[in-house]
Image 1 (tube, helix red, strand yellow):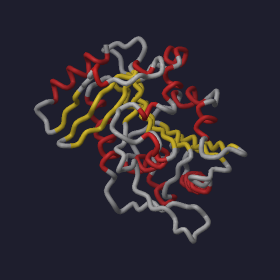
Image 2 (cartoon, helix red, strand yellow; image 1 turned 135 degrees about the horizontal axis):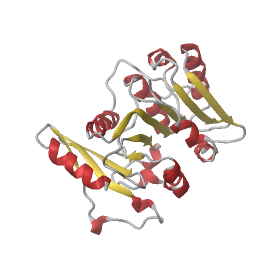
Image 3 (tube, helix red, strand yellow; image 1 turned 180 degrees about the vertical axis):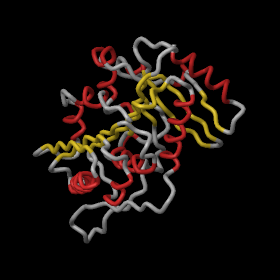
Image 4 (cartoon, helix red, strand yellow; image 1 turned 30 degrees about the horizontal axis):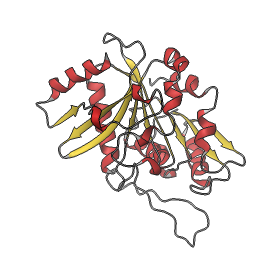
Length: 275
């Protein structure tokens, strides 16, 4: 099982300054919808910092194989430390038995603390009616995003990840984080699916050339105005990325429901490979 592999990884790296700790305290488990228990509760420790994660293993896991890795970043409403709320949106897509059979992968839903974010961003001035966020690029990443990047490196070092098929996605706050992690680690990912997020158009030139990205947004989003995605779509096209953009007429901030219902979402994602 994947759990035993990760335990072996933990023992093999315990001499370094970071480690992976797996905990499943039965007494602390909360009632969950059926199937969510398949996402194992795990924690990535780095110094005094902890990144709660839920990890779904391939349905027919073999330690002799390498698997695609999917990282999904939740929105601001799912922040905390219960290592559960982050599964609210998107987990059912990966739990679907047909999808698990067709697209065997390691799927990770990390959780961001309540007082932090996946990205560095500044909300537009209230007097500015455009609703465009600002994303400074001359500052370090937030601690949670740095932990996510370090955790990905740790999973890669375990030898069970297909490094040509690492995918990133997220919604709302996680959409912001998706755009940011792509310019911070441009040679790491094979494709991305940011939903109702936004980024700094100036960062588009840092993305890998011909990078496949499918962006989603609701045209009537009243939380993260659609202009944030539109600006990134334009900048990425000008930078030579392979951009797909789906904008849902009449849809507000919950465009992730539409995105997850796209029949070709997973087939498109998993067919992308990094050269």
